[in-house]
Length: 214
Image 1: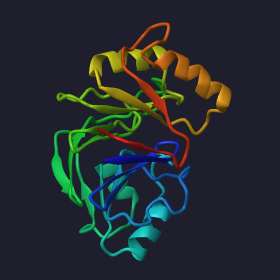
Image 2: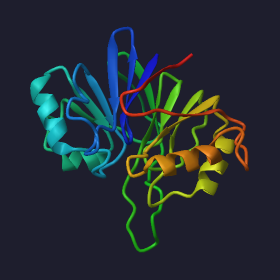
Image 3: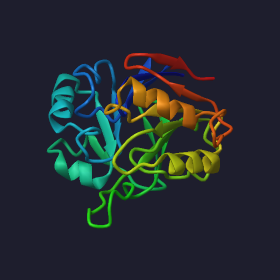
Image 4: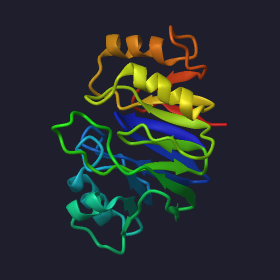
């Protein structure tokens, strides 16, 4: 399976000629959904979900289907036969990819700020995209997509989360607000050789860069 980072929190997974897109939001290239018949959306925030972009893609491709939580589905005025609501514990097949949903809520930003629903996706038992949460699946996770930066995240929490999940590898996402200095600084903390080692290799991909998964 080949993973390609399209920018910020959006990635594509390609296998056997099929293409799955996760979280094509407002910081994602306009052509992110080209060639895809399945899209997963973790939650409603603009950097993960663009109603306009998704509506245009559904119009352009009658075969495209969406899997997301109820909150996103309500916010999007789409054909209910093509927008599937899923939640924690659900398992489904999206264009040949076997997917399991984990988690219920976005990470807390502040006690005064209401939390929104958030669901993470484990694809083919290989790649876990958590959205904006530090959910721990109840099964092994070979490749963990690590949201390295956001108003809700701390490096200490990320390190502890990686240690708890115990993936074979991590790949950084959710970094659209970082400059090269910030990316480098976080990379020194999140790898297996950091000052508080996770014991897990960390990879940072630039937008458009791909990584072949074992």
